[in-house]
Length: 277
Image (cartoon, rainbow, N blue to C red; front, side, top):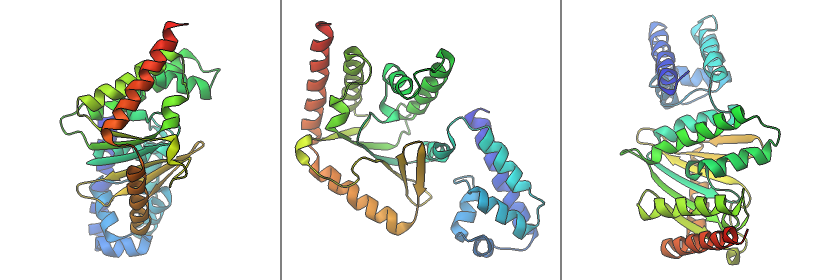
């Protein structure tokens, strides 16, 4: 299912939810209280801004007595999604975000990866992968990166740990190309990048990818990712604390200018290495 048709299907989910709720004479707040979410979230489900978790869809069916229609719709949409279960919702929100703030402790974030770098990452995690699988995965990643080329692209601010620059992924040529790609995006004012150097020592969010996303008509969300797992968090207290941690990371990182210089220097180092192989 293409992204456009998937979004249309979620919009149908929302329209049907609104119709059934109003037919039952229940307000958004009233339904939210019965399924243990806020009335505002019910409104966002109805506008297809956010997608409910499966247990929420099941409780909606129970309250509205809809014979499981929302559970079935949810299962079909999730089954046909193009991304892994733990990342699919984050990928949907990524397209809606007005601002994205990312912390990358180990590898280049997906939105910034070149095809060659992405292929090396996938191959490292699955050395027996077929070429068809690699092409599909790399294609999906490059498709995501298109949001940085849109006129309505989000404000994108990334903090990279120096590890990202120094640990080779693929060949020296792949690393040189990858870092040059990031530098070019910075110079073309597509995003803001800082590097947290080794000398910064201990810091908040050590070892865990972090993404803060802000939206025009919805509360901000935090996405964190571990080994084959990911978590979306939107509790206001958690989001506020995470925002403070991210501010600390930015304060401890090199300046934008110094960070760009370090990225270009690292790319030059890989170029020299490439030239001697």
